[in-house]
Length: 322
Ligand code: RIB
Ligand code: CA
Image (cartoon, rainbow, N blue to C red; front, side, top):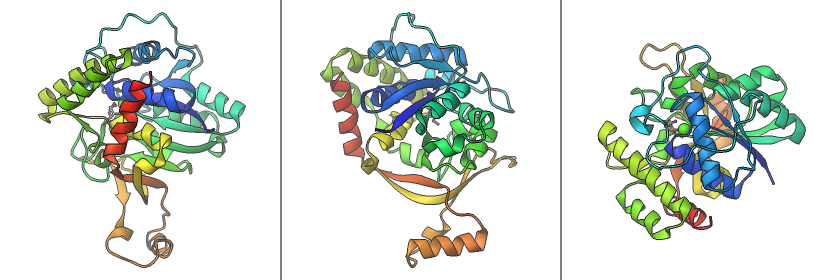
């Protein structure tokens, strides 16, 4: 069974992604990163989620307070002052571990020999781990991320929040030579929830379902108020769902690069899918041709289509199982 570390910034959708991961994956640990809220708040939220689902056996290692270069930008307008407004959860009794997230990733990869990573926040911790151990890339099987977009952004017209918050870290991770699985906004907007989903959660009516109900009640309302969308997107849950059941996501291999310089495009995931422009000969011929033409091979499997019904069946069956 593959062994995972999940790096996150809970965050309403991170919290639900954690619930799915804890039930189906061999999670060696959770690492937290400044993003939706400050490192202190997202760490407290991760501890809270693990207490709600009865998995305080999973260690939580706090990581980077801020991005590599720019100032931390948080998202209180979507996730509230605590980063996980809505559910009333007691102050956690469990404590975070003292080893920094990046060091924990390096140590765990060396102990386990080979691990897979899931990242649902800015990529600061993963990039720092790659700096700490230049041999880390050889010990990481693959990285599933929620981040970026093949089409338009959310934080800016070009950039998605997780990449936008720390583009330099994203550049480091995307160029480390590790197989990437990218759940961008073009995919995660297919994981749309609205009031009908609140009714389903009320119907399941166990502790975890009611916790998810209160999470989504707040998240749907904040998305409506802030972005005028009639619901919310379970962005981060897609990255975990891909690891749990690869059949849920149709992906296309592309070369993806992170824009660092653009005045209007900094933080954009520049996805090269010119080889998909029409029905061309065999994909390997096309990759070879476009690689010869532009010099880069695909470095990322980019999610383009979500099996929506199966995705929500997995999610609700998982919540029921707690
Ligand atoms: O752009 C969506 C991403 O930003 C999600 O990971 C959400 O939790 C926020 O971190
Ligand atoms: Ca997140």
